[in-house]
Image (cartoon, rainbow, N blue to C red; front, side, top):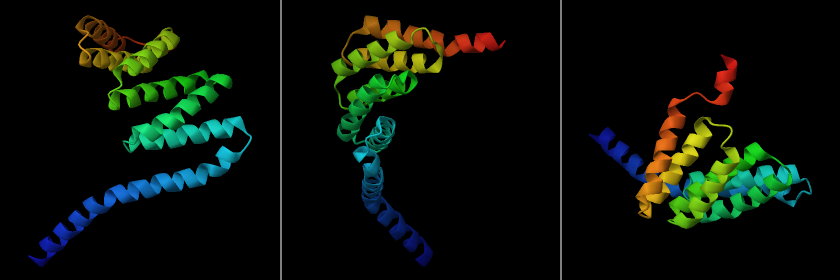
Length: 166
């Protein structure tokens, strides 16, 4: 009986303290990356913005995530880091969706899909799926269906890279 009470108390304490631990981890990450942010090295700065933005996204802090991801996107474009730029743009789209800013999400995801349309594969399918969901939320069922259909085709067909291997 006493053991079950201890477990309940520990469970309750872990639920109460979890948000504070996550906040402390983000603060620690920001502090650790401050030297990169201060640095003149654009690649290190890009890495720092991406890491902080991604960490804030995974902690459901979309406002802070957008702040850093938008900075990372600008640097990725200027440094011509196209693969990372695509990953950043996808997360920006997800942040806008999480923030209920569907028009912004549609704009970002549409541009992303145009940029990576020749590549095929899962990243393109994921972007199409999220775009379909954004259109569905705003009530544009025609475009929602179109992008759901594209996502289904992409998820079930091999990418150009997979076709070259066989």
